[in-house]
Amino acid sequence: MCMQKLKIEKPNQIQKQINTYLRNSDEAKYIHRLHGILLLINNDENNCANIASLFKNSPRSLSNWVHRVNESGIIDVLRDKPRTGRLPRLNDKQLEHLKEILQEHPSEVGVNANIWDGKSLSYYIDKKYSITLQVRQCQRLFHMLGFSLKRARPIVAKGDPEKKKQVKKLHQIMQTGKYDIYFEDECHFKLTLTIIRAWFLAGTTPQIKSPTDRFKLSVYGAMGCNGQLIIHSEETFDSDSFKRFLEELLKNANTDKKILLVLDNARYHHANKLKDYIHSIKDRLKLFFLPAYSLDINAIEMLWKKTRRGVTHNRYFSSLKKMKKSLLKFWCQFKDPNEELAKLCAFI
Image 1 (cartoon, rainbow, N blue to C red):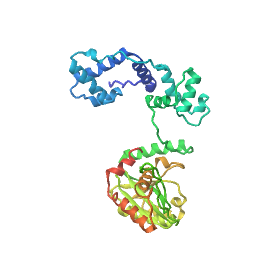
Image 2 (tube, one colour):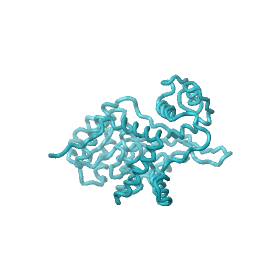
Image 3 (tube, rainbow, N blue to C red):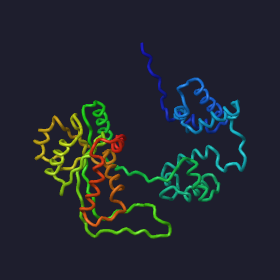
Image 4 (cartoon, rainbow, N blue to C red):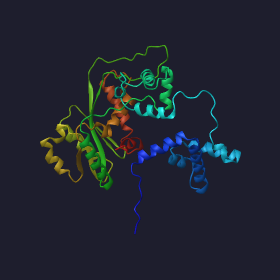
């Protein structure tokens, strides 16, 4: 009789309690480090990297523990030394509370601000704990609590339940191994200048020429989980041009399996005049439609972003022909299966 594998109910809650205890107890930290050394001693297959991953520490920390024990020959060197200097203004419990509320909107805790920054955090600490910290101290506090400045990734607020259902279904299909998956989308690349932040010489005002024409290049794209990219340009997006793209996809796709084409619900993807053609190729291709507002789960969206950063951002093109030539050159490097684009599909 096979014993059932035991699992911790509410693992995140239990892990949080353990981490809080380890952080607040010097003796617990000491025993934690001894445990890491024992795992290295008792199993030759263990190394600093996999134990660090298990302990949620950095490999450098494990390496330092080992070096300290090897150099001294005693385990007491793993104890924390008495701290010198001024005592911290905020205790561990208060710091833990701050870490939690900083993940909420400031208005949720009565702070009249749109985002958390040094000024709003200073105000909250003064209001909550009657402790005065300068703005610069609060900025350093963000780093100490594990925060960093990041640009948030937007997600559409609608369609979430249906999206989860379709993602689960897509995972199940991928696991069968019956299909090669390709992600499809259409995209316009306009001749007008797009500008992003970049490094320029300090004290200068960077300038980039901007074309006055409003021409654009319209392309269909399909990116396989194997990294292969198939691009097809058209004047307009409609059922006829979509059919021509499907023909090119079937001609150039590097696969012996049936293709599962993941795509959105554009009207021309469902056109009645395409039904007979789609039926005629049903042994070679199947369409998998994503729910509305699912840009974040169509992997080829990241390819368009990568293209703009690699080709069109901060760059002046004097004609549409020159922009098209640069784009096609960039895409040509991915015409065969490759690791670089395959990684873009790994998050699905």
